[in-house]
Image 1 (cartoon, rainbow, N blue to C red):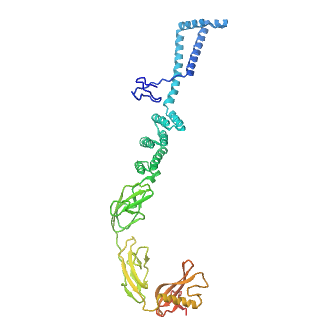
Image 2 (image 1 turned 90 degrees about the horizontal axis):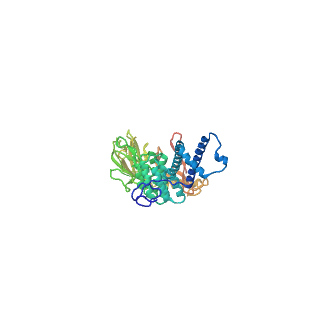
Image 3 (image 1 turned 180 degrees about the vertical axis):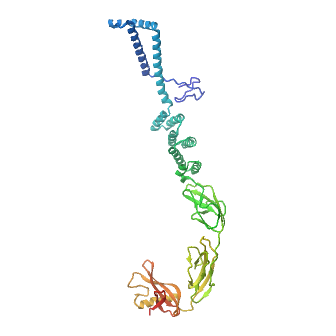
Length: 495
């Protein structure tokens, strides 16, 4: 179609000239079948009105034309002239009726034409047909028009975005989808689909920052939860900022998988900072915790900060009643425990904690060099100062621990309990081995090395038995160590 104003060629679906802006008046063309139908209808109406007039004039007489059985064309024309001349009222009725019929037919035709040309549903149907033929560009043209005709275009936009994506027009698809979620009210299902399509495009192009910004700006909590794996929200602190009178086991949490980095001095955290793996135990003092979260897509959150003042009552340190030094006789290490708290200790010089040995009574000083550390820990988890003691304990005897063990093996071999000096026996698979435990003083009997007995299997695993052995530290005499029903120690000689 050409513009009547400037002659520019206008596309079929345009209402205005793209060159001069002239509005195009569309008048539907009648098809031959419709024109013939109108002519036949008018002829029928004319014949019916003509027959009615003839019947009224004759007063019920038989029409002269029927009696003669022939048609006279000139007579018919003459009759029409008489009809138009003599019956003006009836002519007016005929004209009105014909006009009404013509208008009705034209209106119906125009309605069908307008529906096909200006209905959103029709445009969508045409778009789907084009897409089925692989003509996505034409399909998008139909949907562009459909969007202007539909007050609720969500479904149309989703369909159009899909066609644009298949055409490789991702940016155009994003543009209409972003406009949709920004300006159009729609139900949750359609909104979720729109966000899903946007995120799919961003994710394919690894534009994860845009996804994070999109979801951060979203006010629908359900949508945010649906796609929270793409979000990088600031870490949450298990305790609010403030002053506390107890140790604070501060937990940091994130909204999805990734890593939390933190500092405890208020400095800005980054990937080189400490990685959070377990609660931060805040003891006495002031702390400024700063933390960021970086999710699996490399998106960095805003910095979260917390300020804490911990005021704790520090318990008294334990009192060790034995001084450091050299000792040549078995000696017990005794500790006075403060009223508030529990005493824990180590023997290898490491710092004691709540998982260390708990002091429950006097400790037998071990042979050789040892370095004891004691600490009191309150019920609130506050630690006292650490008290250290170092001891070097040796007996003035030629009987060493190794010789004491050999004496026991030799005695058991002589009694045929063992079949060789390597500890093998007829009774078990594997062999017997013996390990030093401590030195004890048996009242009225003297000092003895106490040995535990184990069974060692072919894989080297040790299983402790219930038998104990005692070897006199000055003579080396081997014995079985037993206890009576009152817990009193006794000896059974192996020689």
